[in-house]
Image (cartoon, rainbow, N blue to C red; front, side, top):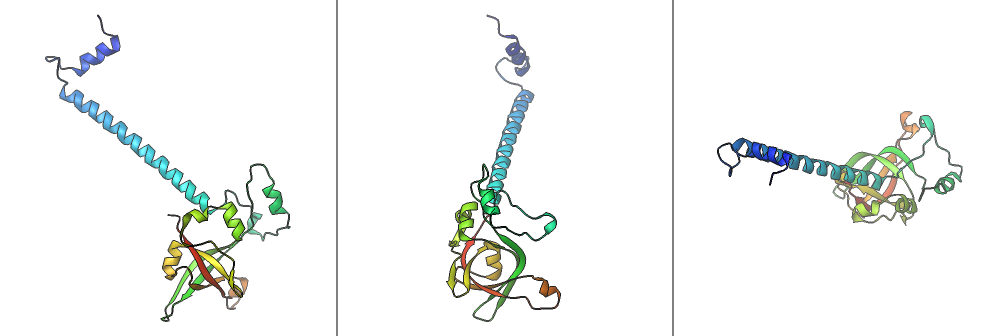
Length: 203
């Protein structure tokens, strides 16, 4: 019974000329090299695909899939109906308003130490956070209660790295200030008091 031509050719090249029972050293090394290379390539592709998926989930988990802004960084004026109109569009599951500004955070410790750090502050509603993001899945401490905990004092959620810089935990008091135009004219920036409601970590 004759062997198929491809098998016959591979058989002749993989077997030693003088021995029909042992593979040549070069053939063995070649097969092992190809197998190891292919295995390494498959593992590398799998790791990169998994990493890319993880990054997308983390980024989209703490931010909305789409944000609407005014062109050329002009102030955005919400008419009161735009949010509802966006939420009614096909494929949109939720829409919420937010404000964002650069600023700094201060944390006064009981022993007199003062910690400070720059930040990007984003003002949102508790309902908007829960409906447009998955921040609840990234909580490492506390909760997402942004409501008023005292007269004029609301809750705030910090990132893990910012909380580490401030040495702050849930329940601690911080002071937040954005950078208004008055600061550029020599005025003092207003400070507003908050209580840390929770801490998140997005990796």
